[in-house]
Image (cartoon, rainbow, N blue to C red; front, side, top):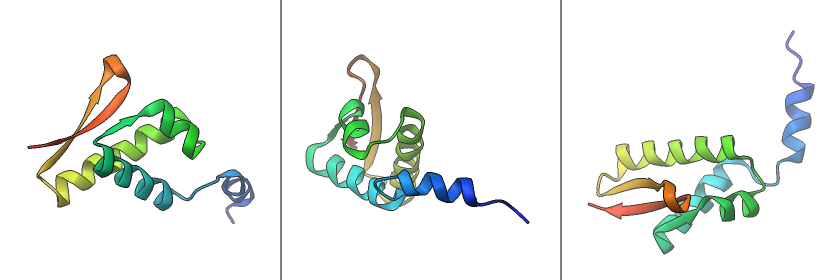
Length: 85
């Protein structure tokens, strides 16, 4: 029988669910066209790895369902930009 206690313990410390975080990021991108990683980490209270996974999910979503837009990472400014093609 798997031990889920550590997984549930971790979930209790998450402020937002993954769905809520993804919706927040998508709304911010479409409203402002720019996301600064540091701001998102602070607001969502997540680590760098989780943020990276969320951005991969958003990039896949745009590729599959909204081909007019592309998500680009601008390393110099440590930010993501939503580009309309």
